[in-house]
Image (cartoon, rainbow, N blue to C red; front, side, top):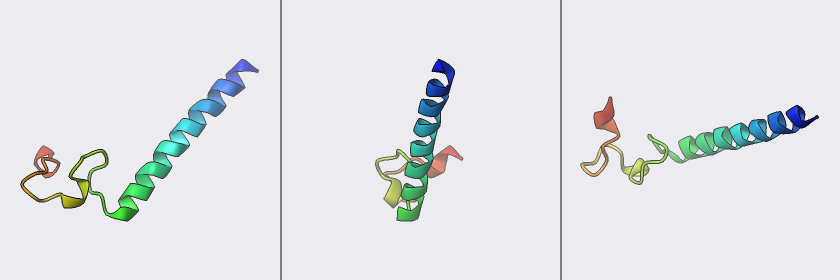
Length: 51
């Protein structure tokens, strides 16, 4: 029974993380977690230089 509870908690956490990523991508964020995500391509953002 404990295993089912742990699995359910992990699935909820993963589901919330995926929902957050999808929501941010719909808002236009190129890199999630970057404080300049909506301004990527500007000199302030280093997300594009990581590639």
